[in-house]
Length: 400
Ligand code: PMP
Image (cartoon, rainbow, N blue to C red; front, side):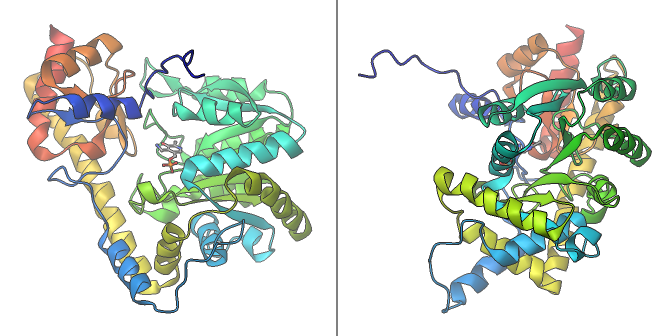
């Protein structure tokens, strides 16, 4: 009965790892997927996460009961505090509805499905380019996707004028997806002054902000600094949505732990929104997993552990920043033609190199270096030993 099923293509990002795993070369390098690696090229379990897990194992009172549909209550409160700030007026007024979801992706999906059911506008504007899964998640949830200009290949920076024009001509009430920080794949973020202008434009047109926060703490190394754009929007008392992921900033990738928050006008509205979120979640996966959220809650509610986390997070962010400098220096010393300063200017896990698909294919074939075909490389997958190999590959790709 399934004989007519056609072979589906690999996922454009996760498929890079599939190809990498098949390559027997000892010098191969995976810069495709956005997962942190140590200087030794190994995945990292944060010390504070191991400590929290040990505490959970030792706690004899713990059981494996189902969580409520909305997830772990402590986790939800602490997650809202983390992104909106402990002194956020929205939290103090009880006008935030937060539900635990399956990492960032699941939070986006639940948020989008709620909007498709209960919001009067189905159109969502997403940046061009954006994380490849965004249009798929949002479309399948019932929203209609349009793009706003974001990246300018000529300057390798933000196309601010294009962004303002496109949002300025969006229909009133449209939803706008915003990367809270460390824009994926470009590594280009608006300045705070630009964020303020974006906010003024969006509020004047009644556009609804939907923040995707997958890298809080990873851009600057500071959790508060990276949440500034979100807090700017919440400060004026208006509505917004935020999808949070703990995949990168706590290294909890496979635990699938995230949160979706709706900032509403009143506590009463927030309570009704939460009741409807339950109706979205229950038939989708019933209720979220316990373990990852327990780890996060354990860390966020303990002052010492929270502090330890910020130090480990900063160390990851700093290692990425140092990789940017090392790669930039290596290209300078080779005299590689072109301006490579965007490598040190861009923010977060990725460098949008500007290499074209043909150059990417060449680097994979000749140097066994794997990356997405748009020329995005994960700086978190790089280490000092591999920098010369990567710089040689880039040099040859652009000069041959
Ligand atoms: N949004 C963006 C911009 C991302 O880069 C990612 C991860 N690559 C996600 C959301 C979701 O990640 P996860 O579901 O693993 O939390």
